[in-house]
Image 1 (cartoon, rainbow, N blue to C red):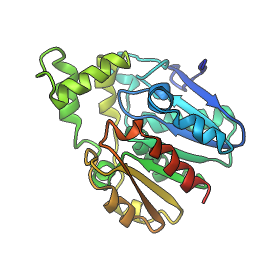
Image 2: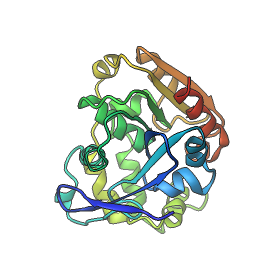
Image 3: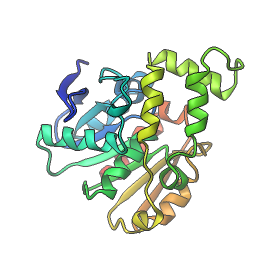
Image 4: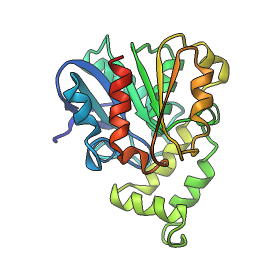
Length: 249
C-alpha cells in the first residue's frame, strides 16, 4: 500500500492510507506502531473491515510510520495528535464517518470526542478506563524503555517493547517527545457520551486499565472481549470480527 500525504498546520508531513469503498472509518494505530503494522501486517484487520463495506482511512500518527518525526519539542504541544486528526478530517472533507483506535489511537479518538467530534459510531480498542482518565500512567515506563535502549533484560516487558520498536523502525527521540503531548479525559466527560461506543480488548490486557470498567462508565458502552494481551490481541482475527460486529449492528 502506498501512503498519501498532507501537511499539518505546523508544516509536519502526515501520512495516511486508504483501503476499500463505502462508509468512511477513521482507524488509528497504537503507540510505537504504525498503520500497516497495526492493521495489516500480522492480521488483515483493515481488509476485513473494508470487505464489510467501509472506506478505511488509516493515518500514521505524528512521530510514527511514514509521517514526520520532528525532534523539536515545540512540535509536540498538548493534544497535537487530536489536532492532526482534525486536520486530516478537514483535508478529506469528511462529515459523516465512524472512528476507531487501538491503545494510543483509542485515546486520540477519545480526545477528539472530548473536543466535540461526533462520529456516528466509535470503537476504543486496547483501552481501559484508567488509560483515558490518567494518560500519563505509563509515561515513565515508556521513557525508561526509550532512553535506555540496549540495556533491558532479555525477555522482559521492556525488552519486548524495544524489539517492537526495532520492528516498526521507530524513532526513539520523536516518540519520547510525543509523550509530552498526551492528555487524558475526565470521568465526567466519559459519562456524558450519549452515543454507541464499542470497547474491544484482550482478556489478558490490563495495560490501560479495565476495559469492562470503561464500558460500564459509558451510557451506551458495549464490551467485546477477545483473546490476548495488549501486544497479542491486535494480531488476532477476533479483533476485526468484533469491530465489524459493532459497526454493522
